[in-house]
Length: 65
Image (cartoon, rainbow, N blue to C red; front, side, top):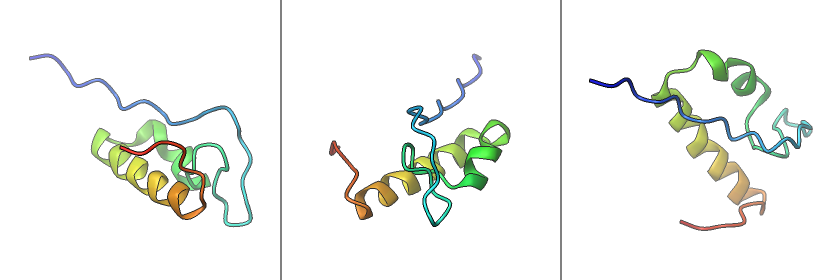
């Protein structure tokens, strides 16, 4: 059985934290960014879901699913 590939980072190389410590590029918190490499795929998927919610709330979500 083949191992599952790691979920890719949502980094878009626009790395700047807002006043809430959320990256304006990928919508991850500073803690999520620093932990990304140690997260399981399930944790990464949960973070990506939160990033999508943050982007939508901030009016930054450009595409819909």
